[in-house]
Amino acid sequence: MQIPADSSRWASAAVILIAILIALALLSGCTARPPLNDEKPPAPDIVVDYKRTGGIAGFQDRMVVFEDGTVSYARKDNAGTFKIPAETLQGIRDLLENADFPALAPQYPAQSPGADYFFYSITYKGKTVTTETGGVPPQLEPVIRRLDALLSEQA
Image (cartoon, rainbow, N blue to C red; front, side, top):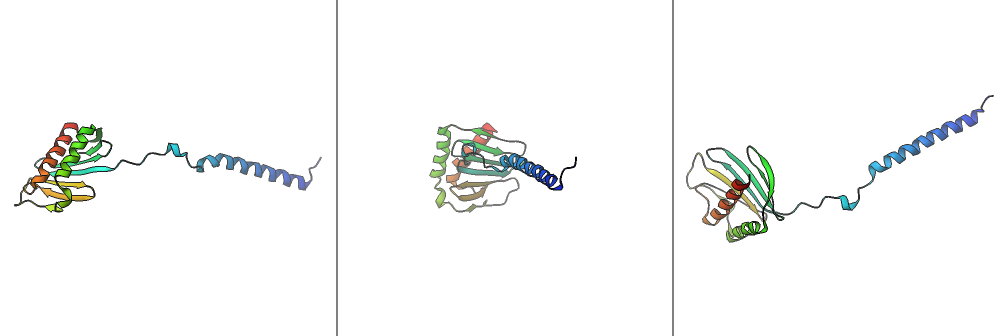
C-alpha cells in the first residue's frame, strides 16, 4: 500500500510544526524576565572613600565606608569587607562634618619634598581632597587618624 504524496507532505509539515512548538516552549523560559522580588537591592550610598598610598612600606590601601555600615577594603596583600556599628559610622560622619569638607581646598601638598611620605585621598559627599605627609591640614588629621585606625583594626 502506497501513501499518497499529499499526505506525506502533511505528515512532514506536522512533525516540523510539532518540533518548532516544542523548541519554542523550551526556549520561552530562557527569555523571561525574573520576578521583581528576586532583583538585588541597590548598593547603599557611600559615606567616604579613603585611599592611602606610599610610606616606607609602600602601602596601597583603599577603604570605602557605606551608609549601612558595611566597609569594603583592599590592601596590597588582602581585601575584604566588615561591618561597623552605627556609633562608629556616626563618629566618622561627625569627624568629616567637623573638618568642614566643603570649605577644604582640593589639594594640600607637602611643605617640602620627601621620599617616604603617605599620600591620602578622601572623597566625601562628592568632593575629593588629596594631601600628603607634611601638608595635611589640621582639620583633616582626626579624620585620617580614625580611618587609619579603622583599617588597622579590621583588615
